Amino acid sequence: MSTVVAATTSSKATRVLGWLTLAGFALLVALAFAWVPEDTRITEQGDVVGQFDAVRLMFVHVPSAILAYTGFGLTFLASLAYLRWRTDWWDMMAHASAEIGVVFGVLTLVTGSIWGRPTWQTWWEWGDVRLVTTLVMVLVFVGYLAVRRIPADTAVRARRSVVIALVGAVNIVIVNRSVDWWENRTLHQQSTLIARKIRDETLFTLSFSFAVGMALFAWLLLHRFRLAYLESQIEQLEVDEAMEERRAEADLLDDSEEQP
Amino acid sequence: MFRDAWLIAGKDLRIEMRARVGINQIVPFAVTVLVLFAFALDTDQEALRTYAPGLFWVTVLLASLLAIGRSFAVDLADGASDRLLLSGIDPIAVFGGKAAAIAIQLVVLEVLLAAGVVLLFDVTVHRYGLLVCAGLAAAAGVAAAGTLYGALVAGLGVRETLLPMLLLPVVAPVLVGATRAFQDAFGVAGAEGWAWLGLLAGFAAIYGVFGALSYGALLEEA
Image 1 (cartoon, each protein chain N blue to C red):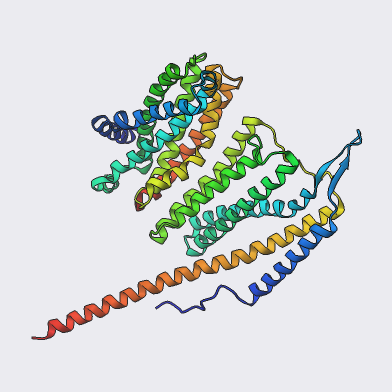
Image 2 (cartoon, chains in turn green, blue):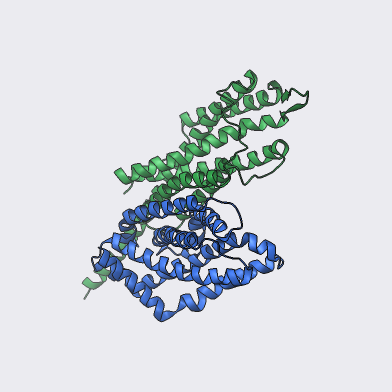
């Protein structure tokens, strides 16, 4: 018999983390809308340029992009770890982080598109390396999740998922290089953080949004991982139950055969 | 090992020669797609000539899905894959053989489609060497990635719908590279055709090695 576990994904630690994340997010919204000034710059010709109010979207867009790549990176590492140790733990970790990666990946694309419309005057730019790479990456991991949803033996599914995750990770590099060659230009600005071309208020809020994003990521990952664990427990319980039933049937048969 | 791989490839090609699914169904399908592209572009000869390389490779990728699916459907029928496992042939050889068979079919398809593009879309070939090399390298890349993913979805209940969504994003670089190389070969756009050939060859090499190494794990459980 398998051990009976509590049918919940929360614990004291995740509740504290959850409330902290929520409070952090409320503060982030307040900072982004009330404290950070709109992004404007006056050129030498005296024109006013910049992202204006759209800059506030950056506090969702940039952390989302980082979390998406974190999620996919974690899937890659967990898949490698599964190859090494072959435990369900790593398999569930790969699944949980891929799912969160896809959520943040889609969020990155959507917020980037909304931001791009007023700033770059386009919803989508095919020549942009990072845009196209991120889209292909999200598609690859949507496929990964599709494979994970197929009912199959746990070990079979785990091994096939590992192959997709590893190929997907390699593919990201190839897609990135090919698109770079393809158009060889990007609308994304390079290293504004390093060049200190960014206002202090914006920089602080951006850093704060990373912290909130990381907390949210950890909270989601803990819950998603525990959910996967509970699912596997239920499957095990069902198998145990079915085996008990078959045994009872067999006992019944034995009894009836003994009668003359 | 090369002999074993050749055996597997010969088996797949022999089945194909006798069943003629490729010639009777996949090639007509690909030509139909070309015709549909012409309809979609409003019979504008100039646009067709400009976009011929891209349309050609989209057609090849769509048709390759059918060829890959067919290659694994043949193995699944009558428990043939189990006997293949029992034969004790190295999985690397099985991968190589299946990929080679698919690549050869794709090359035949490309030749027929290229003739179709020249006739229907009115393009002229400027660089034959580049055309041939890019066609071969792209076929090898698609076949390697396709064999890997074909084995991955083989035996799963929903493989017909799963293969396109898994494989197409992965072969996107082939589409980009092969289209650029063909643009150069057709002389419709100034692209560094030979440099793009490097990308295609690299893609084929990476997926060839990756597929050969992971094929054993995928076969055992199928």
